[in-house]
Image (tube, rainbow over all chains, first blue to last red; front, side, top):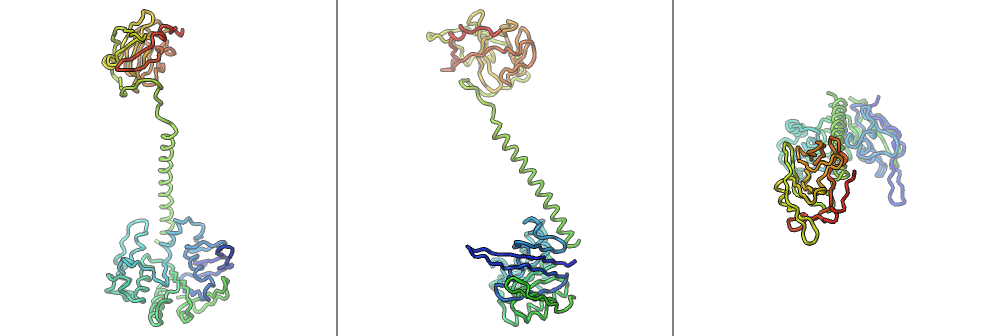
Length: 229
Length: 183
């Protein structure tokens, strides 16, 4: 059975009298350890799909199973627990808290854990792995865009998630820094993380195992690019 | 432990915690409902109340005090005598003496001092009960003179209306004069 199973997911938004169907009967299956890139023009439903995969947004119909868990049959609290255990989120705008240092930002998800845990050692190891050694005490404004993105990646990894969901993680970075970040994702995928990344940049396909192209909320094409590790 | 096992373990413990919270909230809600809908014992209208009393382990015999009728035709009983002696006997007339005493909730009771079925005239307070000295019938001072045991439980001394003014219990002599035994 697939690790992530998306079955006939549809979603519409209603604004006033205008109804927009952002996802129409989307289905696909992601295996464990695969690296999927979701591409498509603006407004094709990429970010909505990612938020549904992250259980942050509920579909109007269809279902999403992760590790055989039907996400939308779980309560809100159970979904929060699911996200904490299974998912790491990385956003285009980093979403770092400006009044916390790099280290404190990385440790932020541990505060949401049902019981007290200490992950400072792991956070320092992540900083080292991501080339941020010596930056632990720096505030976001003291870091470059690439460094902030790497802090955001470290924060996504601190709870050792199985799945990374990334929404345009290189969108705010120059091409060189963007490539460096993509290499980090490739390395994380090589270490077994399942990654689903939304991007406009088709150059990133070289790092992925699969590509899903969306247009007007429909699956245009699913491509297998290479075998997963 | 795998992610799924860890997640399921946390989910179960969360559900357990949720059940405990719901149970505790339920108990609190029931408690509050009971407090709201079962009001405290109502005070008897027109009655005089002193502090609550506990007669456990006590035995108080009646003290006789003279019957005084004032110009307004009211029988006067000094409130402080009742407070001092616990239960008083007022020989207003040979067939219609009065008694006054406090119940456990502090309510002052003034009654015709007769146990009507047995024709007993004297009573005592013993262990939160009013006891007829003739037949031994006991009535609860905790529960508005409800019969506890004995032959005359349905007829506690018949209470009559009074008012308390300037430290005196005032009973209308016309009411006492008109009073008739219930049996």
